[in-house]
Amino acid sequence: MRHTISVLVENKFGVLARVAGLFSARGYNIASLAVSETLDPQISYMTIVVEAKDAKVLEQINKQLNKLIDVITVTDFTNKEYLDRELVLAKINYAPKDKSKLETIFNKFVGKIIYHKADVAIIEAVGDQHQIGELLNELDKFGIKELVRTGKLAISN
View 1 (tube, rainbow, N blue to C red):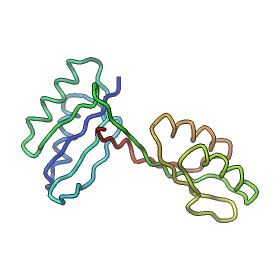
View 2 (view 1 turned 90 degrees about the horizontal axis):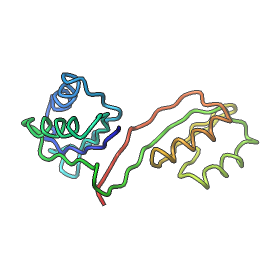
View 3 (view 1 turned 90 degrees about the vertical axis):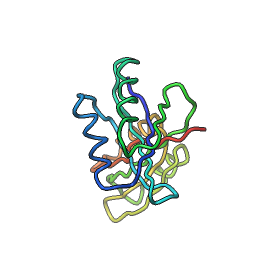
View 4 (view 1 turned 120 degrees about the horizontal axis):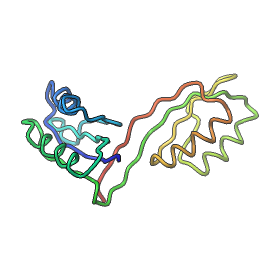
């Protein structure tokens, strides 16, 4: 089962490597990882989505994260209310006649065309994983040539 964890860390050289090393050393798979500075440039916010078979594994992950020197706080969102979003950029086949079809799709999802030329468009969209999945199913009809995603970002509400 996938679990979302946020980690506030000191923004120092090697912190990301130590956090990732903690997971790899124990054989835990990171499904998604997003890291960025906070309002305080000395502190970074990590959103980690991890595969954990049961509550014991998740508890072990939380304990190990808390033991790292540069970790300030660990929040496990498993039993908490939170909002999450993911950003996706997709390069799709495009013809000018497709613009209205795409706009109809984007009325349903939070997305837009950010670049296009004769036969290719690049779109950006934001949503939760379910919404992004539905959008990608719709865009698949046009032919997705390339796709990049940020991974999940999460914040408590």
